[in-house]
Length: 237
Picture 1 (cartoon, rainbow, N blue to C red):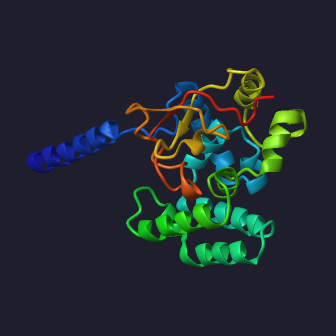
Picture 2: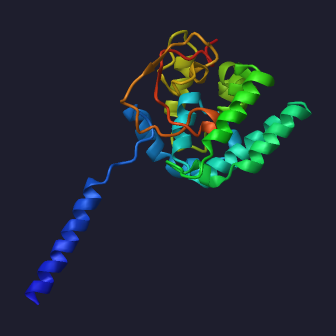
Picture 3: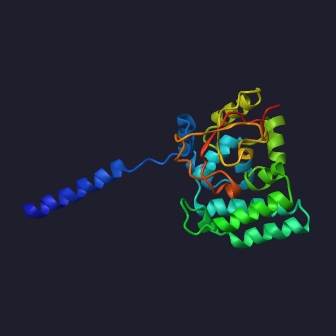
């Protein structure tokens, strides 16, 4: 009995040790925003595309990282269906091809099913044959539309954030972005500076401090954010 009791205790202590040492999930390099994301975790899971897309860019990426693969996939299907309506048939066909190729498993953390060769070829074709980088960014690298960005810039008071537990950080981010140079650094995909913002001259500084931001950047926000933008003018007046 004593031996069995000791074995049981060892197992329980081992489980407790493993749980205690498990790396806590992080969604942002900013401790305050990371705390906000955890407090609003359940709010994000039930949010609509319209709600997520009208969050300021930095907060939108943070909220996006909390979502399940299925939720991310559903948001992008909705966004792509909207985008498709704004383009002529050649681009529509390519968006339809993208929609028929991706599935929810591609949006899992460190997905093994994602076809990077297909995505790279699709991106190259779209950028070099069908649209400029700004339209590409708005269409395929953020859940926001140009109308969402304009509303954030010009009429943020009309946006309903009551679905969140606390609007304070959201309003603070909007207020900072209305002042030239006031927007905090943005997580970005350093391989292509356009994902830092509309301004192609915004420098992107590579860093290792944000290595936990393993999604939210690049095409369909499928790629890691590998650095910080020194500025982001999307919301600046």
